[in-house]
Length: 145
Image (spheres, rainbow, N blue to C red):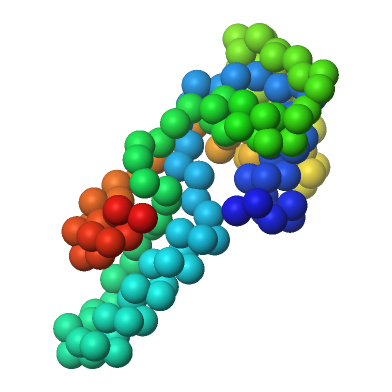
């Protein structure tokens, strides 16, 4: 989504001028993908009501997940961000690990805000990939769009 309030867009915006190229994989979901999938599901429900069952799908743009850093590169290009500094990935990874240790093993962990930041940092340092094979099998036109 390009909506400024989207959590993914806000995270990229915070790193627009200074951020690390993170190699962790990220499936960038978007409201367009969800809307397209919902439209296809509703069309099928109308045409083949008896064949529809409860099933949860995960959607993303066509193609494989890409490194988070690629999303930051694209954001910077789209917003003509200048100056933009790349922070060393190893230094950022070490700071994330240090923050996590501090939250887990010091009184800092009693603060809800510190735990929330730790959670977001931990999530951002893990791959986010999902198999979209099922929705693409059920809706081939979605895979091609």
